[in-house]
Image (tube, rainbow, N blue to C red; front, side):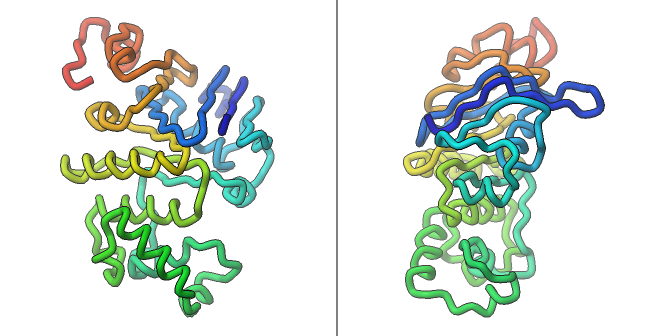
Length: 251
């Protein structure tokens, strides 16, 4: 098992943001987590990457305890995070952003003047080709489209060579074409990495949900199942929309 979570709990101001009894992920599994706003989805990813400290619980990554470790230590274990809002360096080129992703013990300034080896250069171009940015390598990142910035973020995570990728709402703000391409990219990446995706776009979820979909509601695990199973689960419909009589045409 790549990831095992037990009795994970965190509160903010006395309000339970997450109270997750259990969660597990196999190696090279692509898992989608859905749920209404405030369900605890992003909080869960924040805990996994070390950004948020839980009140209690256990998280094992490849058998190693994660809780209590710093964000850097967790990243070095092999957990990479892509946040919802792209956070690339807008004044640098696509190539320079990707170069900074390598695990080099250098400052940002030193890295920019660092001459990459042929191996590093080849790796950057390979990953750029996978995410559809090979023709944009010399382009300033701030000039990329929203979808291209998301793909650059994903490329940066891939270059860190994680065993587990945490992807927060990758389809947000994308065109239909960009969304479909992103889904294809994530499914390809799942052949080499475990991936957890948080998403609200149900058409996108249907595209990428290969195995289980996890539904969180008010910080708790409501149900897990295939996309077909959860889309027809009345508990999911009621909780997700807040109304019992609404049919999910796009769910």
